Length: 192
Image (cartoon, rainbow, N blue to C red; front, side, top):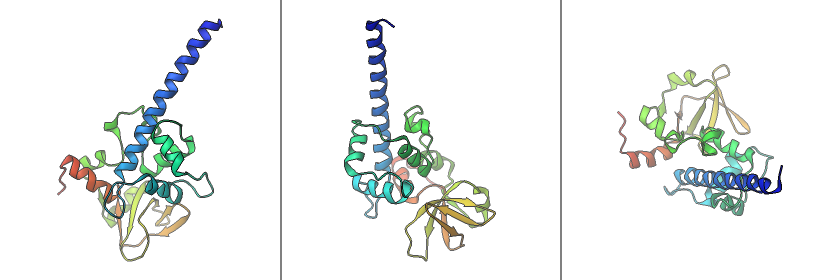
């Protein structure tokens, strides 16, 4: 390949990489800001780092520092694919969304579900969610809510590093309720 042409290919690849970095940065920031902390405010970068390190990224995997998250959100660096994949799986998003190949309207955290009205899952309907992510809220146990994959055969949830036996005193959701509060305010969606 002629030398002048090689430079053009490198420039094109660099531009593509920069666009990808910017799209991923916007997605990560949006996902973080849609999460609500205990004070009812959007996650700070520190909140999101804690969520990533303790609930999203498998234990024993890479630790996400505050400076790393900041550089990802600013588009200065690309996060590792494993981290993007863990975030996508945790929030029920596609990798196409994470890389910016799907539009914002196809974002799967809350808007789609809010329009369908499928937020709370009645205990009797839980078997329909076999093999799917379900958000668990522990009404009596002093345990932090979490996402888990429901297994109808064993009547258990696989949540990060533990298996949680199903109880009818838990609340089940297709999306984290605190995420829905923000979407409902933004979209004026009513359920009934």
